Image 1 (cartoon, rainbow, N blue to C red):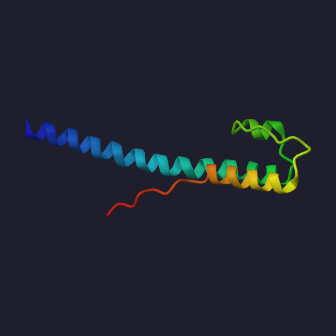
Image 2 (image 1 turned 45 degrees about the vertical axis):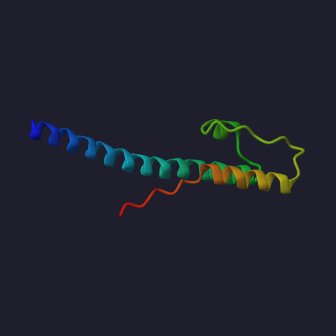
Image 3 (image 1 turned 120 degrees about the vertical axis):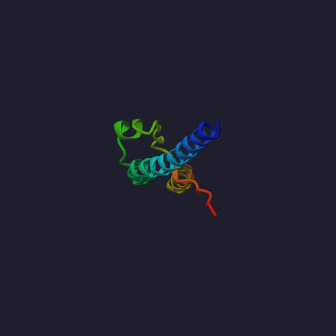
Length: 88
């Protein structure tokens, strides 16, 4: 009975560590693809197809540049990776 319980605990520990690694790399990949599109949005030359890959809508043409920059700053913060809790 002890060996079965220990095997279950080890399997859960491995799954949790795998999931944390997957989540870390998924965040890196999300930032990698979104950062190029966010930079293009800041320059106002992102195409609709590029923005569709991250489900983003474009800005209207009459938006002032300072408002566009502040909105892009907010979008960049949303797509930035969250801090992972450090394990001690």
